[in-house]
Image (cartoon, rainbow, N blue to C red; front, top):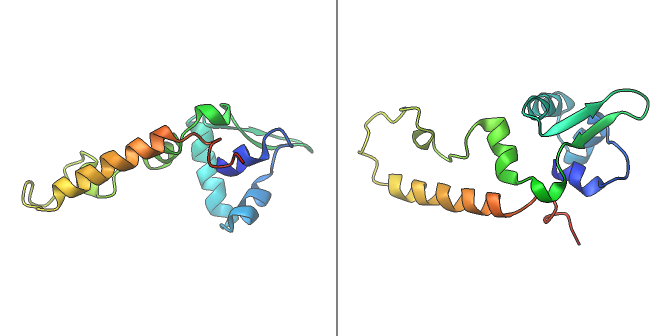
Length: 120
């Protein structure tokens, strides 16, 4: 999505171009963009001039929204997702540190827009 934001109105990049620019396997990018499309964050256009575009203006999208769409959470540890995977609840002395880390990360990823990292 950051790549799409950096392109602005200069056309619609195709998946192979995005994968090459991000140095990522095309199949992985296809899975990611399929999920982003399902979540309504990107649109795909077919045809000779087809490709992908952000559904929202870059200034309205956030890295937090992007990560949440793909992973469903922004938790650095499984015990913070609320799915009850901690083997011994309450026994992890580092848990408060991970909670703080998660809160700070969520704050930063929510404050920054997709436009700001790519703007001059």
